[in-house]
Image (cartoon, rainbow, N blue to C red; front, side, top):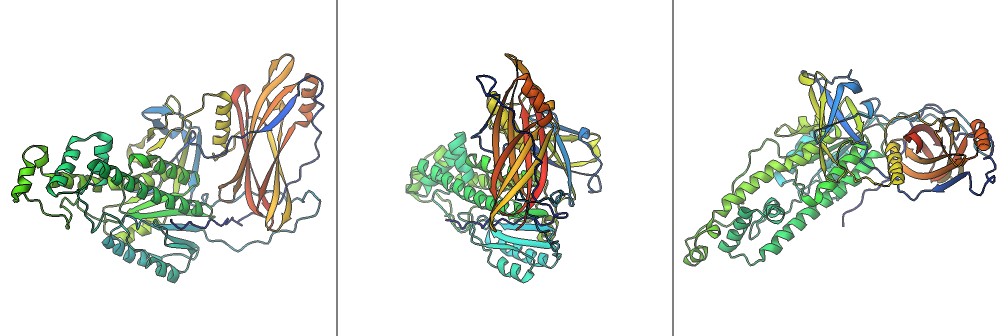
Length: 590
């Protein structure tokens, strides 16, 4: 079992002034709702889980001019976005720079606790590191020679780190986990622990010598030549195996290997996402094949990186290489000199030159292995460094996040939400003179056909977006109560202004169904907790008149640790599909 990465909550202290709990002014109680047989206002907690969905698709885009410099003056209308060739409307648009990537909660006013006891001001913290870099070495797939070359290049890199840089070192096998530090000596010592653990890629021969790529051709594509080559290999070399079982075992082992790699990468991503400031993940790997069983793992990982605002730069550890078509050095030579073997061979498929086919599959594997690295970089706005031997230059470039990234968000229209891969294309007006790097695809989540479930889904998607939307006017306040030094109760009060709500008249009442999602995010944008409430309004005219003065206040309670938080509320009314989202920064002193 792989060691897990400790995910200690590390929150940013980069606050402007002393932001504390916010006390709600006394407000009028909810009017009497016993004028009829049916309650005028009912609120219930939804059991819908708040989680990242991909129905609001975020597309990082890096645009450079002919000199390789970032283009910084583009607007939303300058971009055209296509999903499977169909034009889409860019719903959200933001620009991230090296400065804006350093997440800081906005300033809030100084207030008191609910008990009225003044909260002591928070001392101004020392300047924190501005850049966190996770160096991830794919020791599951790197060969020994590749690992040695990477060691030498990384050693030289440590001398270039600045005082505000913090670097962590991880291996995909999970046995190397050096937490973030600025000490070059510690990093060099940890680096020496990175060794190759590649499985059948080096110094190992199976009989028959079926690769993962060949096994996929046999199992999923019913490829006749791939099957015939495996049968010939088994026959000529007297392999005592069940070929069908061997193919499935090879696929299972490869899928498990890839799944373990993504489990490690997910843990590393989660830890990096909890860091303040600019965050970059550098993945050094020779690449690997993404099989049918692992495609969703890859897409989900990229999605989480994008939503966490993490740039992934990838480096092909093979450097400058030429496809290797030679057979494995420890593979037995092919020969039919033996009369008994020749008689077995006879003629036809069993006699084909299986090693030539195996060499072809080996070449294709080498070409395809880099696709996963290219996708990770393109999908997050990063850089794919490959087919070069100056790995130290690649590492130096990989440490830097792009100075400017455009984040386009869209809700897929006129496309089928079928859970399959959707190809993305981004064009820029007058873009013939620009170099465009953008996310190239995503897997579409199947949407609910239930209108109520679809409303909850839309609210959840908006909760994770990056902008404020004004539909129904709302006000947010927070209160907190500290049970002890390690825990607190955070109350979020969201007040809806009923004057901005669109009602429909039913049996003389003003009716609407409102969904309220409230999320508490840490100072780096990671969801700590979230809840959804469903509010049903069936108001008499007299009640509605009173509520135009008081509004409706909904209280949502969370248990959190002391620290800095960003609270986000999203409100959706069913009439006219009104949508509002609002952010508020608050702090519970430690």
